Length: 114
Image (cartoon, rainbow, N blue to C red):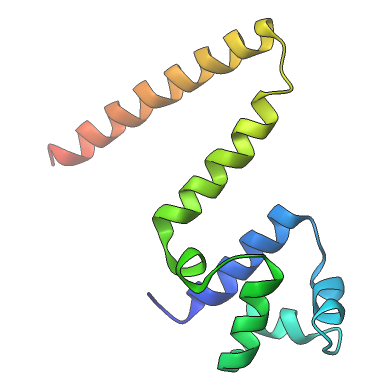
């Protein structure tokens, strides 16, 4: 894990939660640039600040740092959207997913053979 990870993870979670950097900063009791300074890499939160941020997203530290858990959260969000689709749209989505998976396998196979 590199130093950019925390900022990128906060940005991803913030966008998922649909909250601005300013609002999140204020919600956490800091000035409007607090989260921006972290996500831009200009600053790192203190340990207690990091725990406050993790708590803000209703996560445990393990969930914040576990990339497998992150994928799970993305799948949960995708599943929420899929529940709203009708059958015709689901068929379109499944076809698209199948095409993307095939494309990914082909490109991975090409890079593995090099």
